[in-house]
Image (cartoon, rainbow over all chains, first blue to last red; front, side, top):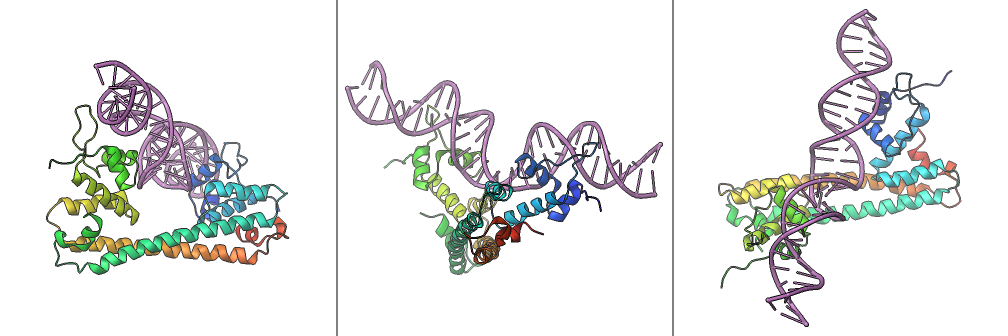
Length: 136
Length: 136
DNA sequence: CTTGAAGCTGTAGTTACTATAGGTTCTATA
DNA sequence: TATAGAACCTATAGTAACTACAGCTTCAAG
């Protein structure tokens, strides 16, 4: 019936990250400092677990530490509305799309080079890839 | 008729990077140390220009510094064949594709969240995005 | 009660640059 | 030729988001 406590190792493991990462999140203010055991070890409760999972899921979605700070502010402070979060998610989606587009152009460049290069038989002087990258 | 020389500023400018980037490439061994003027300023010739352009184009294609080291080794040493370069380009294409796939999954996650969130009217407690990220 | 795992703090390393400080050299104009 | 200011020099520190030590302390199991 009493509150359950977690060591930093258990916390990290269930969130799928390393202990050092939790330290790092504490240093940067994403995770609040938890209570300690008499010996000085960190002792976490369920809200900490949820918070760390939130941070990790947000990181997986490509949010940066600063953006997660903002998201957490929305959660920590009561006077916000869902629309603000939605706007951030949409902005993030736009940025991700931009990255996808960049990578796809890059991919086309690579594929073209590979396609033009018949491989094996050619010496460096004839290589179309070198040609494309090195010669003016 | 004599060889043309370029200052580091000119070199950087035509390659579309900063002077500090050229310094950095020199420190990491991508660019060889050029001759100097009597006063100690770097003085580049055409082969340096081509080499820097090669590095920059490779970076744009997503190659890391270490990979570019390898590519340059292929160019600098005579006993290599085009096939080795082609293999690296193909490997790079695979890695880029992997990144694209990751980002597209991420994008789907964001879009789903945004779609489910009707926005404006909802308080934080009802926000499906918070729901998805925060609640266990 | 002991031993080994886990935790503690603090610092340095990673990638590919970017930015600054404090000084020197080059170049264009007067 | 004198000089102002742009460009250059080296060296160091900062960026993002961790990761990896080193050297010590505490915890949990047997």
